Image (tube, rainbow, N blue to C red; front, side, top):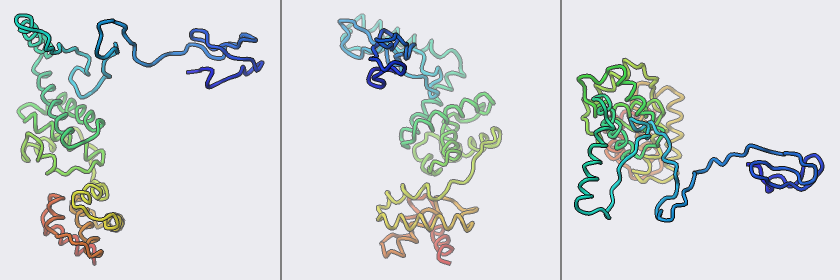
Length: 288
């Protein structure tokens, strides 16, 4: 937005500028320096009895809701008593029923709710949440949900987006907070990967290091050495065909051994969701 704070003098005659409604003009020669200024902020109400939020604009559109967040909701108030409160409760129930017009939308609402819950518990960013909802909707349009578990597809959508976006979340971490079990998630993920041809690839082991190091409470120098080990392992092709989370945990264990820091194979394996044998085998390959 052009103002006298950004430009003090006229570019033609060096005269003083002034703001006139939506235009910035020169008070000497009348040159219009800028026009058509838009206030892109929220519109405000000036009701005397409004004691809460005076904004008139609603929340932004979101892909994490079946109606993109456009529908309204009947709120709750403690000031309503007796008959009026029961009447508003009935109106709210009917309104919620009217918002969902088909079984397809009902499944979508259920799936999106599960995705929002999963991404919240896993502390994933909103971009992962929205992309998972879009992927779930694509699976629904491809008729992949018919006869399958909705919770499994919600969890599989979150896991698939983590894989495609290189977000370090293991399968066991998602299963631990999901409503679906391991078999249902794998069946749904296989259908998504097969039918929608997801651009999935192995996650770089370095993506796991910061989180694993925090859980294991290892010093920063151990984490730094483990990051170098993981980079060398990736360049030498040692990561190929291995679980990236297991490689990351093995790099932390190897760096801890070299720094004489007390870290057991069992603890490293537990944080990565792999077996101690995996840590031991990768450790031997890293030392060779």
